[in-house]
Length: 233
Image (tube, rainbow, N blue to C red; front, side, top):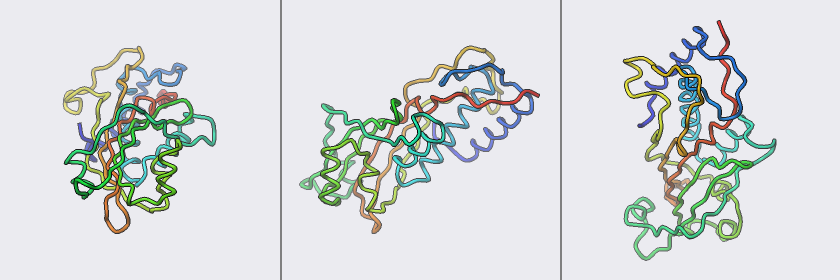
């Protein structure tokens, strides 16, 4: 499911109505213990929409996740996103990737698969095809030998981001909720799938030259914080 402004407006309105009606059950919750209630489901979707908007409006997912992690206290204060390299899963650039990066069949394209981690939480997994010739020697060295996140390593390029797609892999609300209403009313915990969002994007130099193609999958750990409290009426 793609995310759209009109849907966001309906979600915000529904969340406001939930606050007025006081539908949230006031119980102490552990992180990630989102309740399976209409109000909690609306909150979960509103949070996902907020994260999605933050990611789409930033050139670097790394720095957007830095701020998300800090704002939601997902790791000790001062923690920054680091990239855990995932080996043994090489994916040579196919014709589609080469077309996105505007390089011919003979030009080197490097591949890096990582898990972006803040503290002990994996917030996303990413496939990254990039053109080493467009980076400095220092950048390539850092990417090849350290756990630095890509966005941090190439920050000096002052790059831009072109978003190709943003897909909601899971919706807390059932299909047709905006016409038929919300039917969830249990007080059990809401079960989250491993991945919630998927983005496809291309990073470009200031002159518009593409140098990196990305597929980013955001995990359920982005919601791994105490649920927002809606006051009782």
